[in-house]
Image 1 (tube, rainbow, N blue to C red):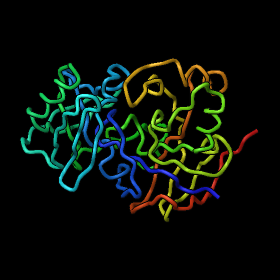
Image 2 (cartoon, rainbow, N blue to C red; image 1 turned 120 degrees about the vertical axis):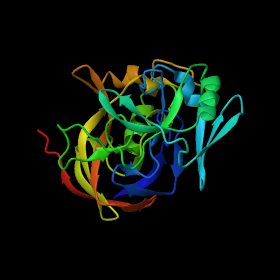
Image 3 (cartoon, rainbow, N blue to C red; image 1 turned 90 degrees about the vertical axis):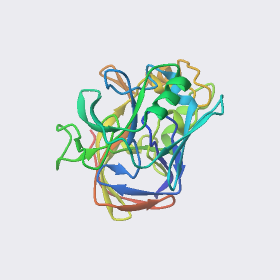
Length: 270
């Protein structure tokens, strides 16, 4: 039996994730997941790919907003759930552009000091609707400020199998999934074309190509060659290294750690 074992949301793109026992599903993914983002002077998104020090900013979700704390400097900032300055900008995530709202210049200054680079924080309102890649969409699905899809799922067996090949095991936070499950063989998520959790339908549409963020220690921002070095030996195809499955969904509701995953269709192999 496949069972949800962990759930994660990442309120601010490329900052620390939050482990939760349950998560509300909206039209664009988990509630609050990647609804905020740091941008540069050209309104382009910032990422740990270029700025690994972003890993040192851990996010907490409270009833009235977010608290972001630097793991080493121990300085914190509070971010309200709603913006106040009513100024929107066009922001860029990879090749996509969408509208987002500026949050607060005081918050911008705090992030700039913590990361030692000029940046601003923006929020994606409900009125901003960013569509997923049309090559994989089936019903004009939308996503938040994620790299491209509302959800990423990884099986615990996949990480266990990888760790058996590594000299030092790695935690799941290197791969930034939304849903982790137990049961099944390693990389069972690769073939999960259609499944449901709590009557919400999920569709595996694209294996996740991995980048250098997986090599960044999320506790101290140090970098290494793993796990990409090892994954490249058996999970590489067309010069890309795959780990995890990107998902689309239909329906809204809530899912919980411990929920069963019902498989309805798997990818045919051979």
